[in-house]
Length: 559
Image (cartoon, rainbow, N blue to C red; front, side, top):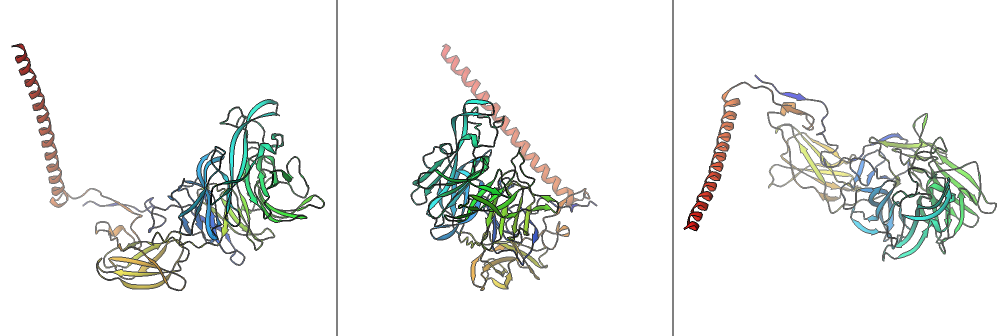
């Protein structure tokens, strides 16, 4: 007798989610979670080299809430965050094509149903928007975007005198309603390349427009209530306050010509400069201090910093600093990207950029929540915020399985992006055209996908999403329960049959196991052979007919 070979090891056939096997998001692994201190809200990420590129939302337990993979925009997404547009919460992010440390694309705004509500692009520059900034101003009427454009400039630096190609940093304010350009600032008009800490070398020597020297590298823009701007120049180690009237520099913090005397801190290669407070006497800003580039290390670790500027005595001092670790003795050092978000309650939420790490901290710096993801993909910025997702153009997904038609039924259900679902109601259907019977009410939603177990076999199932008050939101389609055949049932589990592969071994040579298969093979082979013979005979006949016809007409022509 033959026997079957069974592979019991984990198989790539097993999906993360049975109800949505097409989704393979990065798995968020929560390392620290002090629930007594952690602030409410979802986590917004867009890892840039993960298997399925796109925007993602998770909860504080690490469960997926929404995968934006496959949405109708370019796959590279950066800076996913909640924004206000038309007086309603939306999601904003940059989408485009990556070109080294830059990108070409546009800003995207999607509504609570995850449908594109608006886009924003660069105006008049001749190059597309870049990934380093796309945010809306507080009322959502205008967008702030960055661009990078190569331009020739005469320099005398690092032993080089003459014209070189310099990457100019540009930012614009653009109307969301009309697309009109409202303000534009160019770095070469205000900051000389001699202010840069980035040396001219073989990787960016400026000898061609395809390899310009990126002397400034703008990576954040923000606007205050009076119309001035705060920007960050990574390669000048400086943040600047820019006049909204004429683009002039009103003050600059750090760099080679700082307006203020810094006390007890420094920063270098920084990202994400944000206003926390600003008036005529005091300004408070936050930054993510990388402390290093890929080749130059200025600090042993990266950190988030909150800095107070005293305009009366022209000094600046450190208010708070946030560091984090992968392990108790391993401080995070990120060569690029990163951000610090003030959560309003004094807590800080930090994305560690090139390092696959995010964390939340108390005002005293204590880490109360942290997570990483397994594929170690960089993530430009990370955010935490409240969000209500209502994907009403889709419906819940369901998948059901029973080991036999007399066993229990395992039902898997999810609804990508729906945040208002708190319970599931399950309906069993005996036959497809018979009425559905509600067999389970208010099964609590758990994570992205909820498993519901029935103690009996249900040939067909349907689920209904319920809100916190038990009100129905939307039904799934009716799904036919999968039942394995008797040939492989013994190798299956009670919850699914996707982690074993049954391979046929040698079998006893009986008419049932051999005769029918052999007869079928011989019959197919005979039919195939006959077909080939008839085809070849037809081809020979056509050729012979052509030759006879040609000889006939030649004979007639010779008469």
